[in-house]
Length: 381
Image 1 (cartoon, helix red, strand yellow):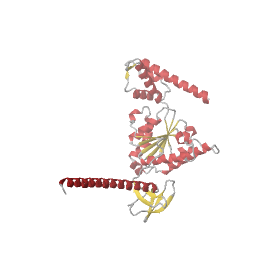
Image 2 (spheres, one colour):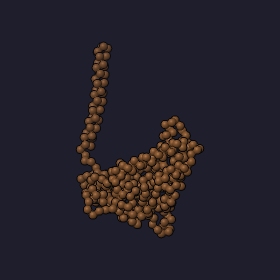
Image 3 (cartoon, rainbow, N blue to C red):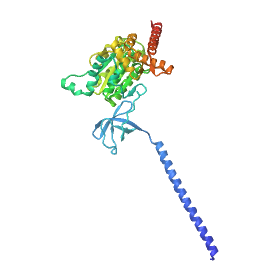
Image 4 (cartoon, rainbow, N blue to C red):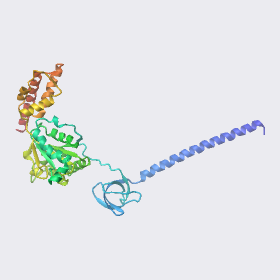
């Protein structure tokens, strides 16, 4: 074989070897892709596993609670590991055998109905309510910070309080301040939000609110406009009224359900104490009633100084005279006066608040309140 033929043969052999290697690599990639697709198809064919909660351990098995609330005694896989009550697990749907333990993640459906926060309102920002602050400290703050005192004395502190009085007098502010002073989670909800359209939904929301409170304890549950939920019950009513009663009964049940020294406290607020059902304010429930009235003269001055503390007031302003002009103003209205006076100064490109700004602001708030009162009388009077 001459040299030229040998070179041709070597070239053919190299080309064949290279092509074979490429084909082998392509075959390998295609096989891996096929195996991956088969694995994905197998996943699609597998039935889903059910998320359940372990209720009790029974020898080699367990008592679990499925999402609809039913309980079953089931077997536990040997690969599952040690379980304890309260653990979240995955169970096979057909026979409910526990497959494995998963991280406990509770999802609450009340998020869109409640406000959950850690308030930062200090007591010094609550003006003119010294007596109310003392009472709410005794009922809410002291049991959360020093529960051992009540154990030593041998008494049980109230589970909650009812704040009642005209609108804008500081009921919500008191609740946030006591939550801040105890480093508690503040869970705020409006009573009317708990009244739901479908049967059982309102009661379920109430139950979940208390579950959320225990999960985030120490916590303060603040129910504003509680009269929408806890008004005096009637014998016969519409289906909507019966649903309100069911929700109210669930609230009473939850109030009776947790221990007095538990790290959950309940604060209700209302403008209509006269229409509340006696069951909600009997001893053992919201049995401490705290009246939050319109502030007297000294309290109005204290509230005004709090809200105007960061404002640049003209030296000629007499706070005592202004306070006289704000007779029968609530704390919220006094705050509105400070805000409106600031707007009057801004419109004239000033940073200093003059006496005329505050006087015009007082007149504006009075006019607004008078108009709202007339509208109310025209609609309901």
